[in-house]
Image (cartoon, rainbow over all chains, first blue to last red; front, side, top):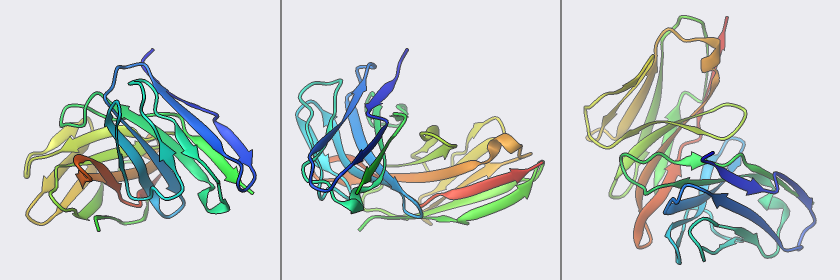
Length: 114
Length: 114
């Protein structure tokens, strides 16, 4: 089944403890992206990747890191999480980012930083 | 700074009504505009619009883009309770060295009562 998977789905952690949220897609998609969703603010893009080893900042990259060493995986790293990073995180992918290619979203990761 | 504004923020209607959701944008070097539907999970893709004046249609949903006036509308006719969701608009523009940056609006919450 074609899908985007994220792990974990729920995470409660403490300030400053490094964490990684994994994202994997099995559709051989070139484009992958991370978003956070907060009430009243909609979805905001954190980082995106046009292909392996090609990443770029979105609107809210501060406090996050990403890497794209292989096509299927695009992990999101929080080196020193803070409470303002408590949010719902979505990973998404598409074959390319063009008119005929829709973006598929993962199920979301709800992160709470205390 | 790229900006996408949706209106109204919230809308309550009865089954059978027709609704129009609005999305206006200010994005440098616009590439495309996307509409998503989000129920209690990840967003699902509805439409991608790149050309002005060409309506995209899927069942009771349709959307059109006006690149001169920098807005798009999403119409839903004969609404059903299953249309209750958050409708998200996103605009693709340049980011860094590529065109992978997506800026989302804050969403319109649509509630359809029986």
